[in-house]
Length: 452
Ligand code: PFF
Image 1 (spheres, rainbow, N blue to C red):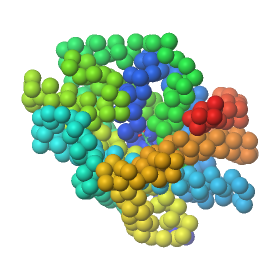
Image 2: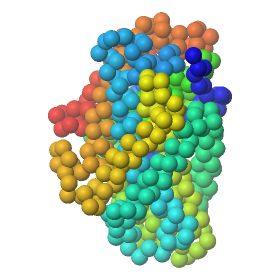
Image 3: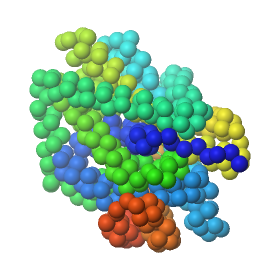
Image 4: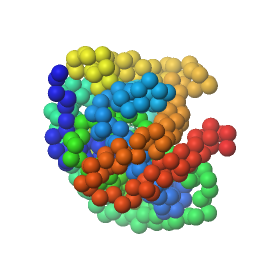
């Protein structure tokens, strides 16, 4: 039998997993959520969610993947053969494929904006809201951009685990972290930036209610790439000496740091430009920021240009490393389950996602009136079903599976590398998986469906 691929180094493991976690969710969604949900108060709740729920669930996915060294669907089949738990393995694979279909559309937008920034266009856009709408609703250009980013992702995945995912994560993640550091400095040095920091970090506890807590939990799961088959698949390439708890901790620290740094970049910049409203919601990155760049461009052209280019490059890198991790679960499944060649499996995933991605992309323009189930456009439907249904359902099943179904000793052996690595919080970890996580996630789920 052909030897299964592995990540070659511990750094590779951490950077690839962090690459999955750090994505559009950090740079675009997190600052928006913080701004809308009470600043520092939200950040506090978010960090608690990451520590109490995110890290234990991430460790659990690592346990499943590393123990079996199999793709996500076959991993559940090995651990609980011919039981309903196997459903979760297939759900994980399906969810990742499903997410890739629409995530690639937004990733394509970042490519377009990077290109516009490079040619100096972002600094001269008159009406950025109209520019954004004209672009996303045009039939061809967003599709071309989506296909281009899918092909970049395809190119990496087709190369395999070490020569593809690991190599490019080791290249892209340090570059991404460097860009963030430079942008934080740039943003802080803009006059009036303190106001933005105050807005971002002023703890407004009056805004805290159950829906804010639930938003923080949802954001933590999405941001850490939990319950989508990605972490489990990556962990199946971990070597036996990789320390699972430490890796999950490092990924959570990198992911949260990048999210908070993105807030440091965006809000001081936005506030330094008085004419721009801070709470532009989801349009922050594609509508509000181009205004900021335009004004910065007017004051100091080169710095404004550089700021814009680096910012959209950051977004593209973040999106690409996440896309790689969303592509791999289905590719690994097709490759191993049906004994296909990696190239064939990669093309099957890429082409099928492009096909659905075209429909998602067109739902901002020519297909805007075509409503799918529940009166949603294709894009909204894919976003809603994956983030609001598959993600919480997967989270509940994974915590129950590792907490109740898997043998306690098996889980202990995995998280401690057969007793060679200390993990004194093991009973707490198990308690979280058995009780806290399933109950807390069920609450988010019911609340999001409007049942609670
Ligand atoms: N965690 C990524 C982000 O914050 O953008 C998004 C993501 C990656 C979602 C991988 C799902 C996934 F499977």
